[in-house]
Image (cartoon, rainbow, N blue to C red):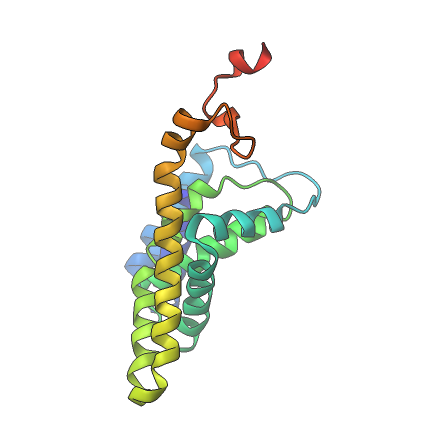
Length: 185
């Protein structure tokens, strides 16, 4: 998915009249397209819901909504290179997911770098409110952080739970811990 980065740099250079960045982005984009095999085939199969679901699980649902909201709000204000990279990566992954299954791992690093935008939008929203109206924003921030921490904790303790109780519990998917040869037995 490096072509999304190069495309974002080229678009950033074009809209901000930075012709050096446009040239570098277009040059790297052309090299990337010629040197790599990017399959763009298939018929629409409904991979968009899967893509958005994987993004929501990867970032946590609330944080993914915060990223989308920050990208939306960033479109109204001053756009920097981070905004261009994140929005182009999200748009390209959504566009590709209409026809084919997209490897989300390729595009998530470009969305992770939008974290400063999320923080900037949050701080801007809190700063313009009176102190008595900031409680909702702080509550929303605490909910997002708690969900992120719980998901991280769940990932961290998943394997120890499997090692200790895996054979007895029916709710754990054992296929990620057992090799394919052992599953066939």
